Length: 217
Image 1 (cartoon, rainbow, N blue to C red):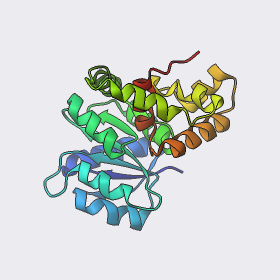
Image 2: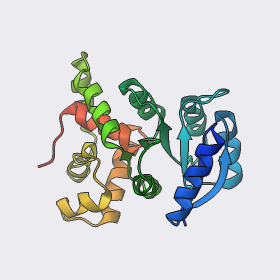
Image 3: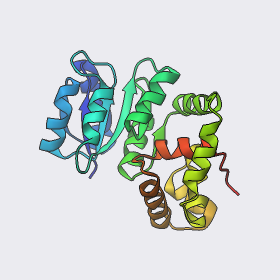
Image 4: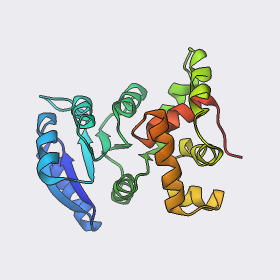
């Protein structure tokens, strides 16, 4: 059973998301109406995934994300927004979001994103993935490529092989099929890679891998 916390300042949106998730056999354990309610709700209900609106009146979703990162075992977070600019996507990833979706995403896409994040995968919508890659490609600081390449030197060959597929947004299962490994082995390699690099989400790992120029094969 995947437990979800829905956070949005619009009661209608919270109700709609709850209905969508429930219809997809996911369990909404609580709702929150603003960013300052997120940490108490997580501590009280222990969700696996938080669907988090980024634009709220008292505390923004980015500030709530930062607060969640301070918890011992924070849940996965999917950032939601009605208008996602490249800067918004990058800021959410840097703050620790495991996924990013537009609020008008179809129900199946929202449910699949929740399942992927609960399983330790990332979940970037196509537009968000494009924003992230445009940001990396446009980075004028070429020294960051060398810095990223040096960072990856701590990874084993197996960790590098599976990490190379992360920027493409593939699931553990898909990476496993391409590298002839089980889902659990892929997950273990990626977990160790993220621990060595000091990142907490696949999206952050994707930035380092892409910036370093690491490619599959």
